[in-house]
Length: 83
Image 1 (cartoon, rainbow, N blue to C red):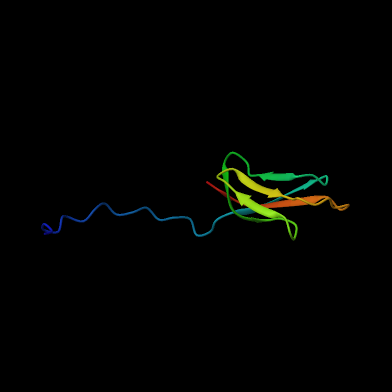
Image 2 (cartoon, helix red, strand yellow):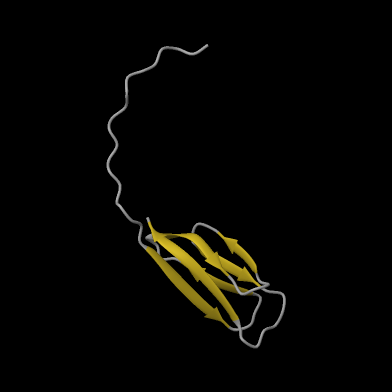
């Protein structure tokens, strides 16, 4: 059973019209891991790795893992948004 409807809450604040995104690219020598980290006032919203590399992301950046050697090296790309 539910109770009566309560009073409305306070009016929300208007948000900004756009979010500023920044792409950070980290090039690494051919190795097992390459990391692209966002700045302290940013957080990652997406990212990419080289084809065939495994992609992982946490609250600070993008991580690319490779099990093969590549003469071109590795590239990790983080798409970062301001907090």
